[in-house]
Amino acid sequence: QVHLVESGGGLVQPGGSLKLSCAASGNIFQMYAMGWYRQAPGKQRDMVALAIKDGSARYGDFVMGRFAISMDNAKNTVFLQMDSLKPEDTAIYYCLITGGLGTQSYDYWGQGTQVTVSS
Image (cartoon, rainbow, N blue to C red; front, side, top):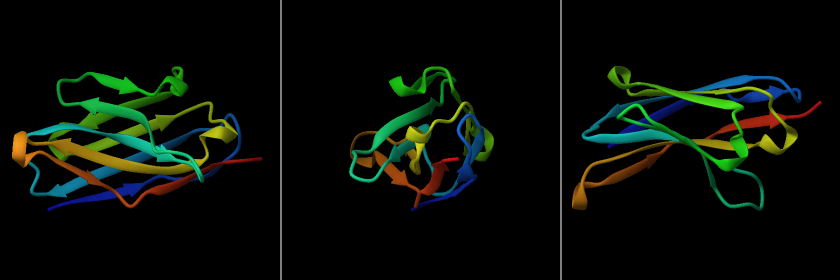
């Protein structure tokens, strides 16, 4: 079992910044990626950013250079720096860790942290 602890959400004004953190602990093996998804009320869950173990990263199209993801492999911790936030970024942000192979592949999700962008 893997446990994810998220932090850093909150209320911020448009144009402001937030930094999310997610630390994973437990039975982590052959981790492939950690990252963030988000879900707004009435909408599907969308990928925000993924940090791949090889050092590469993927971002949702809506990010447009405003967010930066980083990962501390040794501590199984992922960070998401969000700048130039917009009201449409308001959502619950969920941390994800994924890895393993074949029948031992896994996805674990955090409980989510609320990000609200409003004046």
